[in-house]
Image 1: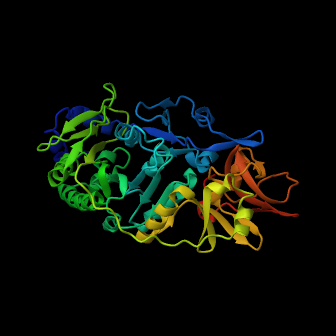
Image 2: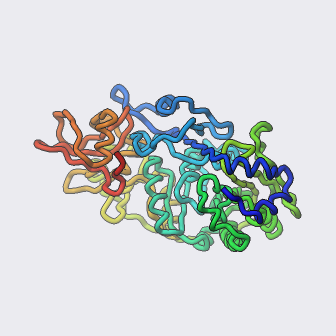
Image 3: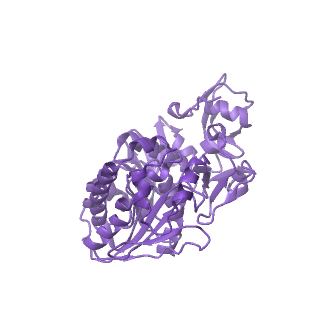
Length: 466
């Protein structure tokens, strides 16, 4: 692997940069694999839904080690075939780059009450969804808007939000400029900015051929435009978290320096552990803190993150809420057979399906719906066909299933056949909708008929690998 000399020369100017060690770690060929567990998944045990435990997932990865900056983040000793693990498809964990999970440290430092307060959070450049699902876990009482402007990438973001199973993620597909309509709305905005990608050279060697000083300059201009728009929708005393997977100062410290020169900000000390190997830097003019991750110093890829508090006043939004069409009581009563605590949710019609939203966020969701193009919100319960609910895959993976749901537990090979939408052996005398589970964790639905069983796993998600 040949690192561009122009990049090495530029990094040579930075304190704590070790050119020889940096080159050596890139040529060694080592790959770091890490996962983040889903703390809200539930398993069917003894006739009730019980919270998952770390060992439920980690037992499948002998030798895994917890990372220092993320409670549910684990390093794996080798990369397995995640495609052939039913728990991956159940959303029990997310495969995510280790350095990027430092987002948790940024949130905990900036929001000590993050786990109990109903904060509004925006992940502006969200696909494929690693940081959005992480924010969903860190702000369990909050509302997380996960946005991706590129339509083809917003699809995988939606899929990962469904797999995660929490009802506090809203998926949108808008340009950053559209969020100006929500002026002063969000308590926190994350900008994981599109960048030149030099921090991912080890995972994606093809990115080396695409790297150039001109590409860095192009990315820097785009990052400034995105941040200008993002700043508008952040409320006074709100928190901006900016990060990239680039090593270039033009995309990192220089961007933060520019932003601090344009607006009244407070730089936040994220207090990394002394033995974590993370390098603290300061911008040239405004002396704002930033944190660099070098793969020769941390067990992870290249990463930069900085956290700022907005000190200047912000105008508040004046959007007219959209009026939702609510499902009739009869429909809600049918859905109640599948969902626990149905009274905590509002059931609304969205196209030909019924969506369940947390009643606490009803007004906020109506505002967001009027301002943005919403691809997903709450939990899609499914379609009502006559007097029966055809439950959705979204509902199967959610954490709101009733204890009255009938389940069909499958061993690993049969579960993989189900995920392939292929025939699998089963013995079940019950008829109607059954929730397929593996080790107690839901995978999706089947419908048992007198002479056959219909597999309702989504065609687009079926696995092809054997």
